[in-house]
Image (tube, rainbow, N blue to C red; front, side, top):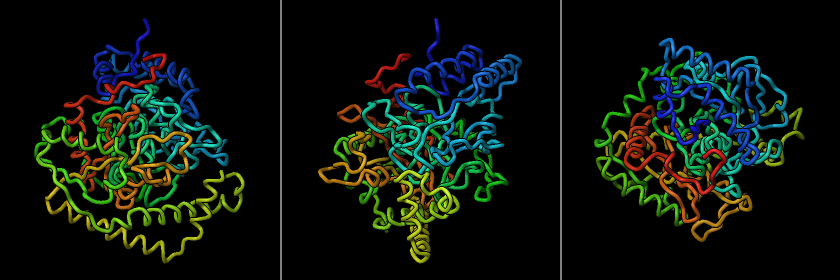
Length: 480
């Protein structure tokens, strides 16, 4: 009888692969089979790697493990990357018409690292055009659909990655996050998504959108899985000058130690808790009750400069994206979608003064948060990842939240963009379902380079409350 692995986390799979209870060959075959059956529904992949290469890598992983050359928890594990990462000899479209036939000559840093760890690349995920969106809408490669309800969006721009993990097509995926593009679709699709500290993970070989805001991020079904990814990818890269030298950490070992009872949680009393959908609010306060026994204390805090959170991010994001696309703007303007063309036009109108002033204010906000964490009053901030659950495809422009009509883009990005501006690590974890059976996420934020605290709290919460593989979808796929 054919094995079904869709409900297993990387931690589950790796333990069985190490002792040869699961064959990497069977695992990749299961992934490919699910992709063939489900991708036509959810539209999560743009390109699948060559079958022969996939199976040869799986056979090599199995041989090495049999010979005692086990490399670690990612050995033999299938993965995917968002289609703005370079993979040698594999098409890299960035979800655009302009790059529809572009084939890189080398692997992105993170792809190279994951291959070296023994992970097996299955393919490249769908995204918003040039990662310039939050809804998962793509006019060239089709829209990404939410595995919990195909009438609702998966979110973006890493919507293909989140939907692929959520539906069990792949155990883990790598995306990018410029304003929430990993955390938002993770929350909407009921999976775990981490945006590490700016500079912790190299972006070499990734098509940029806004260089001072872009982060590489990870999506999987468990915080432990994310720790395993960070363990092999974090560190300085000479080809990415923004990366910093940090001591290598065994993240998976660290988060298994019971350190969370000394961690205090701060809940902002302003901004992040405004305009919440009632179901989101209910899920979040239930989450706080469930996490109370795990951490040291939970207390409310006040934040400064909240009126600048969104507008400063928007100014930087639009101005930098416009500059990055200047050459193609001059030669391929009509090949952009209407939405991206509009964004680039808005970016060109931003003055140097407004750009530099936004940078100045962001510096003040970063200093405010540094002082807050340094005070010892809290170790982690917790907020809802989004103020609404996944909108319907009929709600792409505006959505009603808490009896207020809000632009959908701003509603989805409201609680995430700040942490791209100031570069702090943030993780979204699933905390429950709305009355319409759609996932809700909580976002945890720490001071820079303290991902171990985020992952420890998230992992402890999973152990106490069940990881995301235990959230039962109303949709039942052919393999589940």
